[in-house]
Length: 432
Image (cartoon, rainbow, N blue to C red; front, side, top):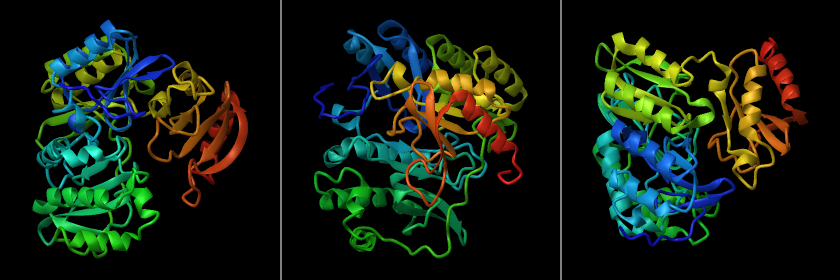
């Protein structure tokens, strides 16, 4: 496979991007899914050619960190396992996010995986789509209960039912919980994706790398009018995606087939080592269907587990030091690489998050960011600690009326001071 790639700051499988702790390779997984055999290969690659750090990302992908001089050998090993794109130019554009429970979620309106495969094939095989930014992203939501709905996407699609028909609503530069621009019949969903992407490329200037950049200058109504000349669109009347349930990525939950569950757990702060990943692969072979699925919560789940084996899987996760109970504070903390691995990080966010977890009296969703880029969280977290110096953070609370991290609540807090403030806020009846 030719590896002639355009310049980009985003890592891919074929593009190793250098960081403070070595090279980063990002492995994009179709629908977050990977076979147990492929997981073993990722573990081998991280162990043999890198520093042994494997990260679950907030788009349901994997990253290997600390890659040294043998990057070519690492890439070849991953490609041989079927973890790469169909062509070098297609790697950047494989940005399609599904529910981790696609095809098995009891609340789904349809199994999104067939349509997702069609979209991914088009993204990789359509030469013009290779012009899209490596950050340009699409979300396909089948109505599942387990769904990340807070990550903004350049194009989102969300299934719903009306008068016995499955329709697909869509929107631009936002989230499925926002207002939809229109809907198409399910059989026209693939054509809609193609039409939106082609129209974007027709209208965008080089500096318009994301849909929001184009819509800053072009009224969304004008984009929609041109889109209607390319694909049949129905008006959406009084429909909006309901918020997803919380916490369904941790623990065991029933699937569509009676007697089967998926079982989810969180690697502490999204990080695994090779022995952990191999152990999870063994559990997948023993109790599941020999596949793993990674989630946008930087966690993972094993699908198609017999309900009678759920407790054995949970115990297996615990032996591997995975967090499988929603009551564990560390399961609710996310943190970027921080100063230990990133030149832009001004604090060791991973270490500080681990310390914070020991101080919190209960599970609170907290995001620690080493700089304003917010690499660990694609959405606005309910609580953000933004590093300002080693061990010191500004505290923000999400506020829909304010951009970025939300409303600034306190400055220059130590981790201990932040823990005290957060614990007090959690106990306050006003904020309950």
